[in-house]
Length: 291
Image 1 (cartoon, one colour):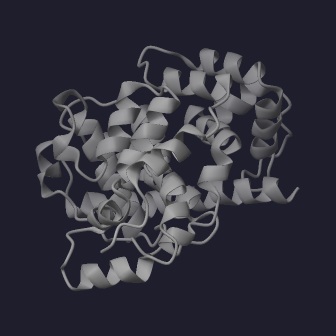
Image 2: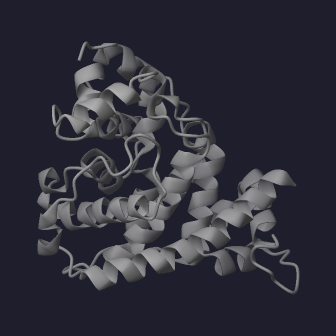
């Protein structure tokens, strides 16, 4: 495969990605702190008027079916939970990356956000099956962010999906990552890692993004957490929620069993439970966009 662009051009595009808002950045910092409490999340949301308004619209949407309207941000955050509030904040701040059509992957508009949200839900549940104690909230946030690099690389991969799929079918490349690197000199995991560094995300989130397809290469301190998101990513794709031509074109690292106590029945149950939760949350986001 002939290389279409050089790595430096793509890194320069990454440096032009808008920074996260102070409130979104602080919420992500809290996720990495196992000792924080919900009141700190509420305080951050209260200081961000647009985020407050969006959280209230979500909690009062028909998808949640509350009998009485919620007017207090304290009650809204307590009801929705920190995970969903972080999802709202990231959607507001990085929506241009999450919701754009992934033309380079033959993916439709919103496919990346849907895949990341389902991955986040699955990663959180998988993390609870770890052989060591993991921060489930951090696994969720890592799932939301793991594929952020695709929003960058898509612009440089136009019309390459058929070529990469053909190379995979011929076993000329091992997975879609190898194809990205052959064409661009960088893959979406590394591109996302560069975005994460620009955003100054907590190190744990940076490692999830960088190694979610190669968890065995992650630093030992973060390896179990990365495996949780690695498996959550596969679960989301198995559930029919991918990002286009690359769906299920990445191998599952079988060494996950060294870090996660998961049976095939567990995986099936996680898929069923997360799909149900996903449908409700997706409906609430869709409703607030229309209103």
